Image 1 (cartoon, each protein chain N blue to C red):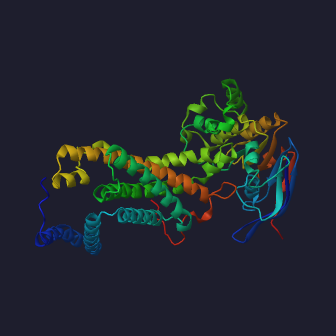
Image 2 (cartoon, each protein chain N blue to C red):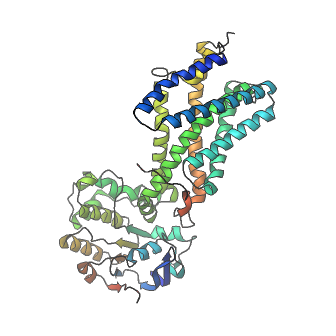
Image 3 (tube, rainbow over the protein chains, first blue to last red):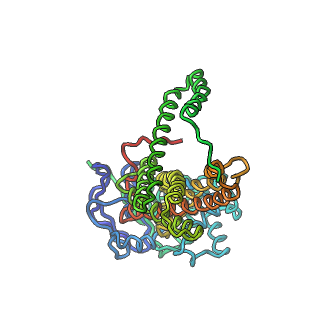
Length: 208
Length: 270
């Protein structure tokens, strides 16, 4: 499903990723782990075409990542960034935001689906009416994740999904992902609890 | 027709005496605005005197080619100024802003002068030059605000843009929020001015026409049309400037290029 072959990424001449390879099968849940600043998020960003790779190749669902395929590739992805500092008004706005795009309009979730998702992620049913600045970082993260899961995409890219979650909330998220055997997950985290529940841990180390 | 009472050169120079008031307070409160004020007034005087001489020549000849050339020069200067003042890359933005201004002015001028006023000769200097000048002036200032707002927000809220395209938005959908903000920021003041015109301010064009001897009702009708055409031409210029420049500011992966802003500009952020 996701195949990175010896990719290298540099910013202003400084090498951030060097000849990194990874092969993730459909339905697999993978975490890329390692110390801060080592380039974990850069790998997710390169899968999404946000950063340019200087060497190697990226293949998503048998499509070689290029300017001509990037739209088709992004159509398969859902991405949860580490920070969610968006100027949106309410938690409901955050959840429904991706469904305002033409591609997702047909997948607009029913009330039951939303209610079930909120329950599974241990969120109160009335959270969607709350202002974004009234809810905690962990709640915001789970509302965004609920949105990503309701999109029903095939590839979920999670950047530090547990950064604002306590153990209990983390376990709820992990349990939720486990309920979706078809969903491929590539996450970035240095949280041990999260990492031990993933199928594969890819450890990034500083080049010696 | 009554014409405006001419001001003698000596009388005009008496007008400059009024500047003693602001200059005194600038000096007293050590504002460092004395020198800039003197320079600004000197520049204004020289520029307007030159314009007076040019317009005198243009109105005397009333040659369509000279009139068009004058409009083209105004549009070029406006495009240069827009790009310069907004701190954007000249290489990327000059052509899009220029094309937007040309299209906008062409449409609105033709509609106003040819269709509404029904003029046989729409290149008549007495109409074409001042009306186009007013339209361009407003397009320029509002376009600077719009382009600044659009590219500032796109840069500061790049995460929201990326979040959108990574979760199913087309580029056009992802940019909608930034266009909305740019339109609000640039057109809100214009709408506010339109709403209070005549109540707390008498617009320059109308005042000028009345001083020039026009019937006040005629002056008001022109003012109404000019307010509407300013709104329309500004909207066309802003939308086209953003849309056309968007074709050049993104990488093939739909990510904004780094060189959108000019490197030599130190931007002041509030």
